[in-house]
Length: 279
Image (cartoon, rainbow, N blue to C red; front, side, top):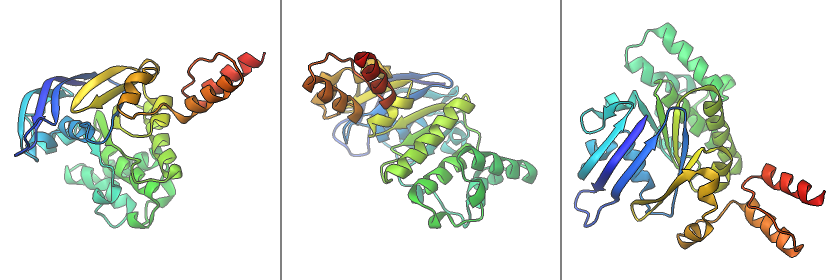
């Protein structure tokens, strides 16, 4: 679904490349999390996946990015948006309509899709993100998590094959962050859509992501199955990426008790290991 080959990118007038020799493949239905410190290149890569880079922002590129069979250098951002929807970290910057219903309908309506189909998509996407009872509300009157769900629904209404989320929980409280990940979990369970999410909250990615890509200095330094990547603690600590809190707490607890323990990445895994040890 996504194929990035030897991709380099440098912002206009920048002295160095923001992305260097990026090679990445994402399959249909796969959920890939991207982590890394600030300035690692996560947002730049997200923008490259739907053509904002370099089509709208400019700059110098090498290599290629192909999404759903479309080369981002050969198609407009509008064309690519039908295949790869992008959700920004700040939902308010993405919302422009007076009601939730109008916001979700905005994209399909501008494509000239018949009204009956637009209404059907509004209801379908509102249900998918858990906003069925709030279609007549002002988006700005909603909580941060709800606004982010509106932004996600408005992208989904375009029926893309890929959704890219650039740190969607960055400005949210824990409840709002949980709401967003609940939506992503729903997508994973009910659709074949590919999901790419740049995110700082490793705990949630440990639970939901199939794969983790670790970036630093514009390069991919780790890429693999979630559990195997998060066990590379030495590499992650070198770039100030901490393991999930449950991992640290479980290891601290068992070290104090003098018990050997694996590396649980979720609360469920920690519970299973504790029960097994106590037996």
